[in-house]
Length: 178
Image (cartoon, rainbow, N blue to C red; front, side):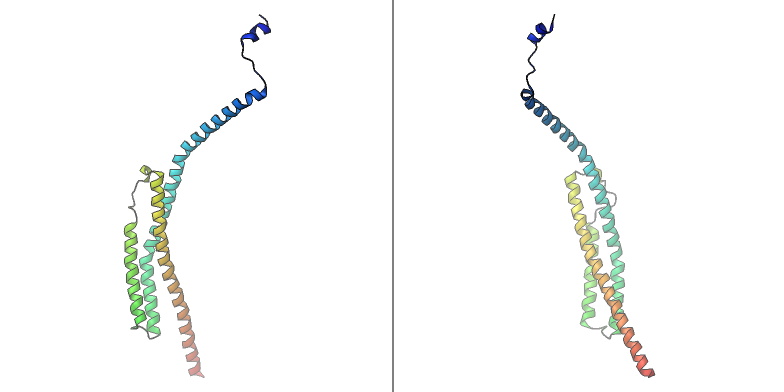
């Protein structure tokens, strides 16, 4: 048997332009399969990333909320001391300040109540549920951070006021010595 006899029953190979659509089709199908496989494999990684981020944010939010009661008390005593030093202890500003502190203490308690329990197993959550929980934790942290900034700013302002009071007292002492 020679080559001409065998080639008669084989399909003709044709030219490259005859094969180009088939090569494109094969490449497209292979790309689609590879993409689907990568997507399927990335879902557990995405869920893991979300769980880690959720745990990190939850921990940071707990830390801010744990810090707030002491910070509110410290800022309250600082403001009270300033008002005593300036003769404004029984003023309406002091009353409003005390009411704001009580309101913020109750808000901290409400925010703590919105935190999830410590031992939640997030592995059984779907990515959409994890995203929703993460957004809720972000919102809690923003509210807690605003309260922290409010009281840190108040204490900073009180420190400046203390410096002014000390400067006035020093100037008064110097004036009496002269």
